Each structure stands twice: as C-alpha cells, then as structure tokens.
Amino acid sequence: MTGAVLAGGSAAPASAGGTGGRQHSWRAGLSRLHDAMAARVAQGKLVGLVYLVAHRGMVHVDTVGTLALEGAEPMRRGTPFRIASMTKPVVASAAMMLVEDGRLALHEPVDRLLPELADQRVLSRIDGPLDQTVPAARPITVEDLLTFRMGHGIIFEPSFQPPYPVIDAANRLQLVLAEPDPRTPHEPDEWIRRFGTLPLMYQPGERWQYNTGSLVLGVLIARASGRPLEDFLHERVFRPLGMGRTGFSLPAADARRLPGLYAADPETGQLRPQPVSLPQEWTRSPAFPSGAAGLVSTVDDYLAFSRMLLDRGVRHGRRLLSEESVRLLTSNHLTPQQLAAAGLYPLTGRGWGYGMGVSVVPDEISEPGRYGWEGGYGTAWFNDPNRDLIAIALTQTVDFLFDGGSDEFQRLAAACVRG
Image (cartoon, rainbow, N blue to C red; front, side, top):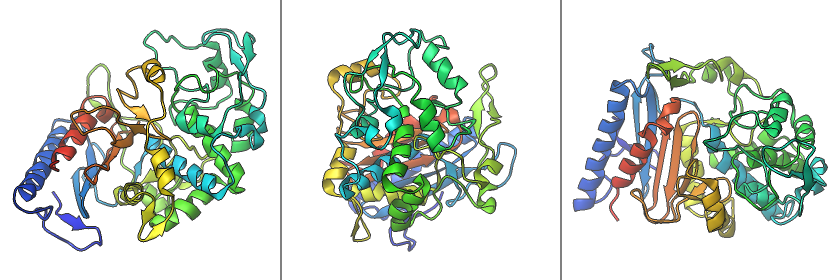
C-alpha cells in the first residue's frame, strides 16, 4: 500500500488527511479500503487494480495485484488502462468548450454540421420494420446528444431478444453502437453517413438511451472544431491539464504495459482473458475515435480532469470551462418520467448530466450532488463536491462493475472522509 502524496508531488504520510478524529478516520478508512481490494485480488475476483482517493489537497494512491493473471509484473501508478465509458465525461466537457467558443449552441439542431442527420424518421415501434416510420417531431439538438435523449441508444430490456430490425441493420453496417470492441472500421464521415441511413428508435427528447449520443458527439466535435477529435482533445483538454498519457492510441512501449482484459467464465466463475482490445491495437490511431469509449488513460491523468471539474472549471490557475458549463455537465437533466423509463441499469437510481451520472437522492455513498461514471472494462470514478472528494478505481476486470466490486470501492472510498 502506497503512502499518500501531496497534490504538488511531494511525499507525505498516509495519515496526513486531517487532525484528531478526522485524521484517524482517514487513516482507518484507507486501511479498510486496501484490505477490501486486496481481498478481491486474493479471491480471484480481480487480477489487479490501481486506485486513488483525493481529499482537500491530499492524494492517496494504491496499487494491488498484477498486470496479467499468470504474470508477475505488478500494477504501477503509471499503468495505462482502457477507460471505456469514462471517455464520455471528457468528450462532453470538450463539447462545452466549443459551446463557450460559440462554435456550437446547446439548443441548435446538429444537422447544421451533420447534414446526414437531417429530416430523420422515427420507428413506429421499437421492434418494427425499418420502413414503418413517422417523421421526427423536431431535429436532434446538441443537448440531446449530451443528455442521451437523441432518440437512439442501447436497449436495456430483460425481454430484449436480438436482433430487432434496427439493431440488426446497425450490425450489418458495422457501426459498433454498443460494446467498443471489435472496433468499427469506418472513419467518422463514413460512420455518420451510414448511421444517418437508420431511423431513430424514439422521438428526439423523449427518452434517455445510453451510448449513441457520445458516438455522434465525437463526430460533431470534429466538424465544429475543424480538426480530428483526438487533436482537439489534446489541444483543449489533455495538454492544458497535463494529461500526457491519455489518448486514443499509445506508444508501443506503453501499449505493452496495458493490463490484460478479463471477464469471468459464466460456467466456472474463473477469470478468463478476453480476445479483444489487444495491446497491438493501441499502437495505431483508430479509424473511428470513439467519443463513447475510446480513450486510454492513467490514474493521475484522470485525477487532473476530475480536479478541474471539482474546481469548477479551473486547473493550476487557468480556466478551461466556465462555472456554468461545469454546472450543466454535473446536474441532472432528466425528468422523473425519463428516469423511470431508463430502468435500473445502467443509471441505478442516478440522474444524468452531460456525459455522466449524477446522484439525485441520498444513498450509502453520499448526499445528492455526487457525479461520475463507470467504464465497461472495469473502471469507476466519482467526484463528491460536498466533501471535496475524488475516487478513481482502474481495473481491467469487467466483473468489477457487476459483482459488487465497484460499489464496495465507492462506498469505502467515501467512508474515508467524515461529513
């Protein structure tokens, strides 16, 4: 277990999180968190992880386990991870920079820059044939993409038996609208052209549906900025924040240090390596840089992004986003009816801001106002502005999200801080 590290980088004892009872709570909480995560590795539920808890200027980082199931190389603080859907908040923040620049407006139709999405049709019913449609009641807006109310997304229904015609058509077009791998072979212009041939599932603004909004948003950012999505992110987000190890690809030496990707065998429960997202794939830029799930990052890089949001748009004295933009990113925009229609997964009682979940009721982790998101390859993050708390867990074990590991991490990380 590592010691805590001051934000400026100098070492400090792990107990330096406060005085008296607060100091004891911090130290004891970190110990409980370490023991719980180490137990998961020992039990074979995780191969390894890097996690971080930051509070009032203190940053505590811990590394547990190894990069590979049968390997000896340990997890390290600088280990790169596929962060999957933790890409979404980063891309949403980049979009808000373009809104502040005047290159986008939240309530403008996206077809100004994405004419492929003009004059959309909407399925008469979600499981119906593609030629049974009605006109869209209104255009898709920029805010629809950010709030996932564009009328298209992943279907989370217990009774869902693929393929619905609209899902089958998307698969034939190789759009890769759900899981990030195997990657789509199409470059952004061809991808959006193909996507535009499909009808929407629901009317724009009607329902919350996961994922597709961020895919389209990445294409929109490139069009609005006049440069590839990755270039815009490097210029406006990664470079100003010092996120030098975050991107859609990696140098070969760093790619070799990607942890193996694992999921439990459904029959035996044993972790098995997954045959996707192999290290060599990350040594070249993808044809389609996914705004939904395409980034790789490190715990310190994601801390820099998290701290910028927690500091209401400022990092190292430089303002990257306005306070109003941060408020919009981190506030719930869904109606009670939309929350109810979204079902239990993946919101699990949370609301939705721009590209991230937002707690709207008290729970075992915090009071309302906590925001963050998880990545489908086994990563989790939240900011709690009420307590100046950041928690990040990076694994590459998919089951971490579904076997209680992520919930346990977030609960114990929150418990390190009183009040």
